Length: 538
Image (cartoon, rainbow, N blue to C red; front, side, top):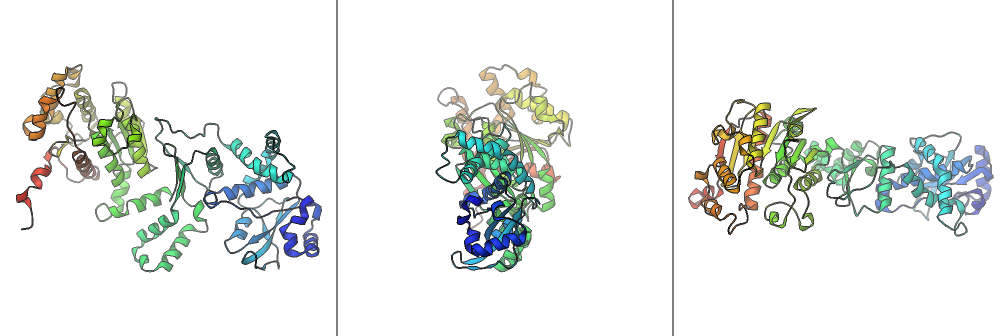
């Protein structure tokens, strides 16, 4: 509020007119040059996102721009409002703190001196001050009647939205298109991130805000020290120490998923990963977890391969991924892919990348939505960071299956594959055996060039040779002659695809950690392994 509305000042009512004017004189200010900094009311969810910080900064910026030599206001102390204002340069006036029945808390007078910008947000205040004149013009151009409310309040309310929009980089827009698969991260400790997040909220694109960071902090401190669980007070003290003076809403990272409209509050990356993989301990220790997160994995074919990719992401096998598949999700894929009807028509790489990012938004994922071709083969296997560390090959095209292995063998990259029948796991340790025959020699000396432009019958014959037709399950053996006649394609079940994700993940983890996992073919035939005579109880 400006001096013209001084009769409405809460500070004047709190102190009484005479004491109010006397206090200003003691501080060296005149009533005509002192503005009131009123309490701001911010909806709970927006408060967690830092909106109160920007409203506060903009109110100070507006007062400075309008000529205020000082700002004065009342601050509550029960929830730390006084400490919040101190971060903007407000200081408590001595001997003004007392209990106020109306607010059911102690209240103190706070004073801000415009000539001495202070506080950790001084830079933000100055930045907003330069934009205030334009924000005022925007309010008038918008047709807002300044007679409806005080001019300063009208300008402030409209100006917040206008100036925040101006601060955002031109390219900052949400993207829910089919090609979008990368989340955006916001650290409220960085002023540009705060500005961008406010613009996002103002856009109306956020459909849901999820903030469980306080529960995550509890998980963090108890995963570090499990014995704390016996004492809620000890947990609370540990969380307070972890926050180190920061408010929970400002701690960690806000992650925006444009394809779902969700904004999620998470712990910082390293702490999030520590908690997320905490239950891996006892099977994968911390040092091994860090080692696995430093590895780069390529996945070709995101039908069966999607199960592998998601299992890898959940288990923390790999921190960087390259995904290749030209195909889009169709209705018939829903019998085995973890997806919903709202994903139909979405490229399988994009689908897998989104799901992986929803498990760990800090993964480094590169997609090849046109599949693996002669033009993209080099980029997929190697780039400025060097070759990938492991290949999961799950595509259906014989040429690509062999060409990918030729690249892998040349670069010394191990290859794992699940054949989705009888739990067949195929491992080729080209990192240890640089001259090993491709596919264990089942195709002889056949090269990828010889597998171009095959007829349907030729392709079928090559695939059956690759998977060893004599070891197929009776069901698949009976189904193959019907493909193209009474069956539209290869029969596959979700249970088999899920098993393939488990088998490839187990093999990949052992290979990347240097544990024994030799080349070869291995069957985990559930029908055989769970037959009646295998029961361990009578």
